[in-house]
Image 1: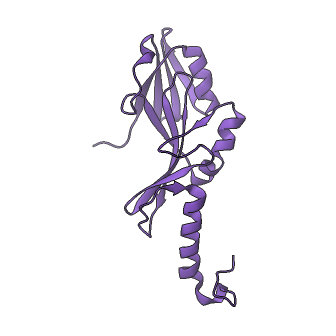
Image 2: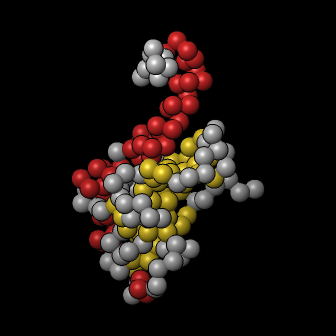
Image 3: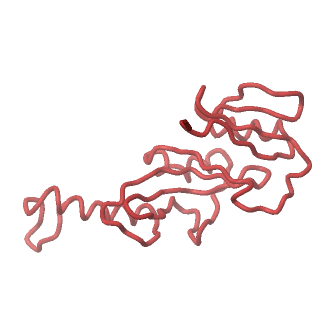
Length: 172
C-alpha cells in the first residue's frame, strides 16, 4: 500500500525568501499556488516539500511539528558542514553535539549519521544517512569516531594478521 512519503509541509514567513533558501539546498521549484504556497521537488517526481506563507510561524518549536530530515549519501554528509557554511547556512547543536561534524545515533543493528540546521523561519532541518551497526554500538558519537571504531573492526576481521605490524597494530 504505502510506498513512501510524497509530501510534507512547513510554515514560512516570507515565501520568496524560503523558496530561495530551499533552492540553495538543491530543491527544485515546481509551482506556486496563489501567493502563499509553493511546492519544491526534493526528488523529482518522487517527493516534494510544500511551503505555506503564514503569520503562524511562531508556533513554539517541537520536532513533531516543524522538522524535516533529508536523506543524503554518507559521502555528502561528511562534507555537509562545509557545504552548508559555504552557502551561508549555519549547522546547529543537536542532542548535545556541537556542529563541528555530523554525529551518529545508533539504534540496534543500524545507526543514523546526521547534522542539524534551521531554515530562515526556525524550522528544524537535517541531513541524514543510514549506517550499518555490525558491532551494535550503543553510544552516540561523532562520525569520525564512529568510522574509527568501524574501520578498526573491519580491518581486523577482513585483513587478518597480514596487515599488522610487529607490535600487533593494524597497518592502515
